[in-house]
Each structure stands twice: as structure tokens, then as C-alpha cells.
Image 1 (cartoon, rainbow, N blue to C red):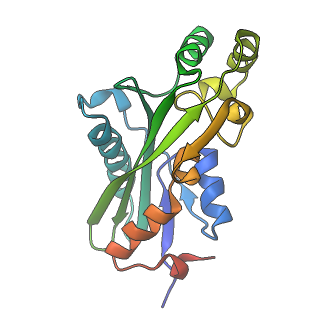
Image 2 (image 1 turned 90 degrees about the horizontal axis):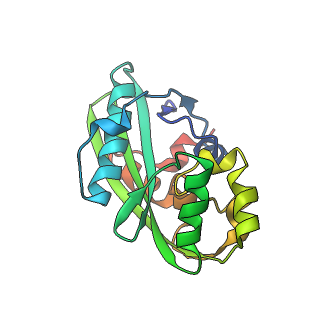
Length: 197
């Protein structure tokens, strides 16, 4: 059987790193999808449809590839939080996070462009935030990371020291749930082991 080509419809270096560490070697094609174009109020549906739309845009230019689309947001106090708009926004969000929990939602979509079959799902991981002080928050807000990631926080970067723990899949927080990806691929009749490079 000829190995299928994978395309990651995301600019996220963390997603790409996770896939490569898992033995996969996707090509990256950024969708350019306008995330503000969807008016969906349900947080889980929103992240799933963002992933679907990103994957569909990239799939339109492919003929024999498997397309992976993802999108992550933090569900906190009933609202979804993507990337922070400013350093002040980073500090204000973290002041609210301190000592509390949120749920990191990652929408996943896989499209088989040979059949146009599409599967999607949402991964959820609970985040237990620590209690960084204001000087630590100001230092974090001044980093490149703070404005680049959903929430904004990471468990594999500078903000990892501010997260007391998680309940669920760590990969989902970093950007892609490999167990969920395996299940989605299986629904398309593809074994993840067949995609190992």
C-alpha cells in the first residue's frame, strides 16, 4: 500500500511538532480562513466548525491527500477565549484565571480528498491554573508566546510554570489530540501506523 500524504491546515509549530514526534510528516498549508466569519455561539460547535472550515479550504486545492484541520480555544466562565489582543489583555485574563479551572477545546477535522469524506470531533482537557503574581504575569505578557497562543497559556512553553495540572490529553492542549486523530483516521479507513514516516 502506498503511503498517503498528510497536509496540516495550520500554521501552529506546536501541532506540527507533535505530529512529527508521533512519526507523521505532514506538509503545512495555512488555510487563511477568517475566524471571525462564523457566528456560532456554542463553544464546542464553534471550534469544530473552525477546524472543518480550515480543512475544507485547504482540501479544495488537493486531490489525493489527507487534510488535518484544528482550532483551539479556552472555555472559561462560559466564554471562549482565543488569542489575546494585547499584553494588557494577557495580564487581565491571567488575573481572572488564577486558582481556577478552564476547559481547553480543540476542534479536529480530517478530510480524505480522494473520497471527499469528512470526519470531525472536539477534544476537551480541563486546565487547573496556578497563582502567578502580577510581576510574573507582566513578564509573561511581554513574551512572544503570550500573544501567539489560545487562552493565552501553554503547558509546553513559558506559561507551563503557571499551570498546576490538567485532566485529560496533554496533546489536545498543545494543539492536537493524537488519540482523537487516530480515531478520526480510523473512521476514514486509515490506520495511523500506515502514515508513519
